[in-house]
Length: 148
Image 1: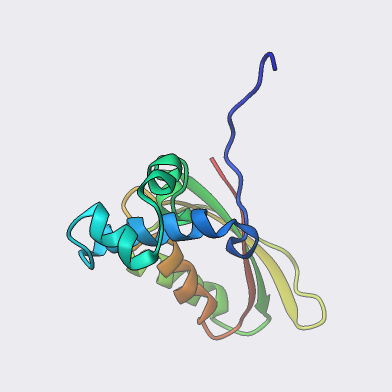
Image 2 (image 1 turned 180 degrees about the vertical axis):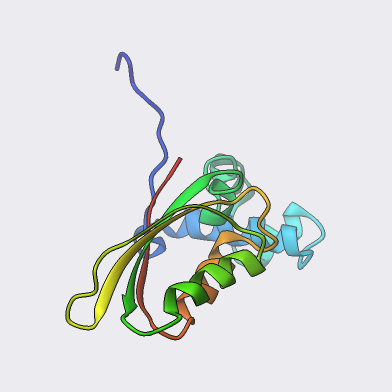
């Protein structure tokens, strides 16, 4: 095919083939030090070395793809004092740099907010930050809107 573009896609893990899931787990094992060699890791995961080498350069966790990026998050926040402030403080506590904030007028006790953050200086991976943000009292929903 001419002019075929190679892009990136966010795909839920549950629809991935087993070999790709195992490749991701092998890479995580090696990164954490749970296995000393690729051979040891693929044996533990019951994955062939050829499958690992086939996929290893093409799959990686979302947080690795979002390093040194601008990520836009959309929130559904309860309309109560301090919720947005708590969200911003959580981002700041992990060295995230807030670039833009946009909050809509509260309707029926909730407000939509969009926050763009720069991830270059994050002290944790993006997934960990997202988990912390989901736990903030008053955050009803959090989604990654996009990244640049």
